[in-house]
Amino acid sequence: MPGELFLFKKDMVDWDAYEIRGCGLKTKKRKETPIVFPEIIAPVLLDLCQQSKSRVGNVLCMNRDKFYQEYHSALQRAGVRDLPPYSCRHTTATALALGNIAPGVIQEVMRHTKFTTTQRYIHPDTAAAHKAVNQMDKGKAQ
Image (cartoon, rainbow, N blue to C red; front, side, top):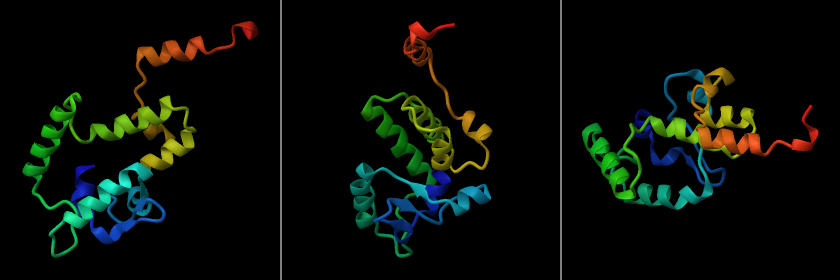
């Protein structure tokens, strides 16, 4: 979430646990639960932290307009469909679900109190549905 990025400070990163603590917004669950990040992202976060010139420790040293400009420019350079930053949460939940990650784990990654909330973030497409039905064991059909 962009709002969490603006609160993100260097000292919030637990490099050993691959977690960011203390920049959650909106709900008690998101405020209390760390943001987990994959090991592959650690060098990027480290570089951002080292490049930050913030006197108060902010990692993202730009205003909202500049952030959105940079975000949309990066998507264009990567050849990715231009969606709002919040859509990244939907992409994450969907990718985890399509990767056969347990629903409770997806809920924890998303920092949702209820799985029904998590379900609203998962958007499998028709290709995923075809793959799923084609994996069924035809010999055990009733």
